[in-house]
Length: 146
Image (tube, rainbow, N blue to C red):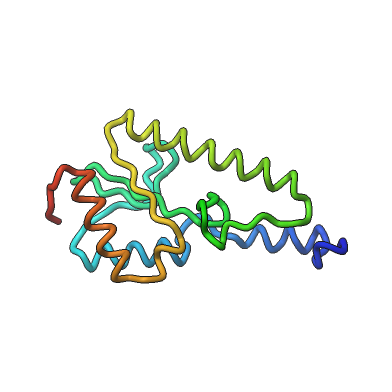
């Protein structure tokens, strides 16, 4: 425990282990919205680069649901940097952002259209629905259907 971090290293480690990488609340919101819009999808396809959160095979679109904190949503109030162990966090965030760029490039090279949805964009379901419908239509060349 330091003056800057109210948790001991063991407590902090336990907190971080509880952070989910799949089936997060923002991801569930996106899934519900897609389903309401009539889209059918697959989850976490391990045969695709980065194991995308949501895959719409018919449209050749993958949806990557990014947490604003972890993936550094530019200009978002949730993209804060912890004060304690700052250099560690900066390196970690850099690796995450570099991996995001590599995954998107690899998906595009395989003919998939990646669509990023930020955690903060899942708060307004009406806007989210419009954004998803627009992005999927653009990415799939206007094809629609379930």
